[in-house]
Length: 195
Image (cartoon, rainbow, N blue to C red; front, side):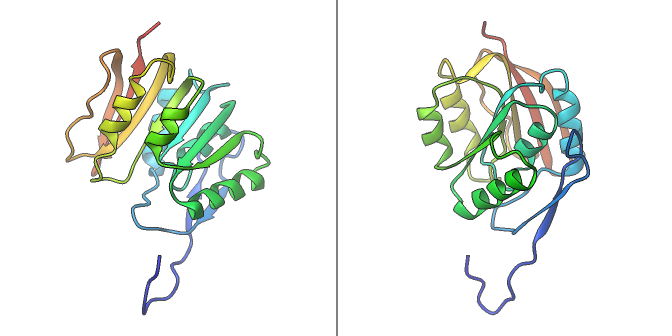
């Protein structure tokens, strides 16, 4: 993104907060709409996910910095697909995976979230939906995920929105498992009750 009259943006830092890469710091270039999930929210979320994360197949939709998917891999997830429309963001995630020796665990996909979901062939155990705020991307994603075969039976879907936004419209077979508000962020974890 051109920033006329300004110096290039300084890299920001992402810290892995738990698991095998705990304490590792990874730098990424800030971009418009990029808002990594805070350490505090991630810590709460992954405490919620602790019983389910090991060997889970994960999807980090609207991956951005990759904070959620990288944290999942650090804590024992089997794999993670990172989806974003930004080639630069995905290059950074791919570089982080290589730095961590996890290149075989993560795959990066440069495509709109809904297009990726339309072509997904296997169910995911844990899905992270954390799009840029105010762009009305959550409900269409939930509608797409209502299709059978995308969320594993008993699978978990994490949704992060601005606290001022209405709660997401989720499929009838998802039950709200946990939810919390921190500052201007509302975050919710749903479980797919379909068997």
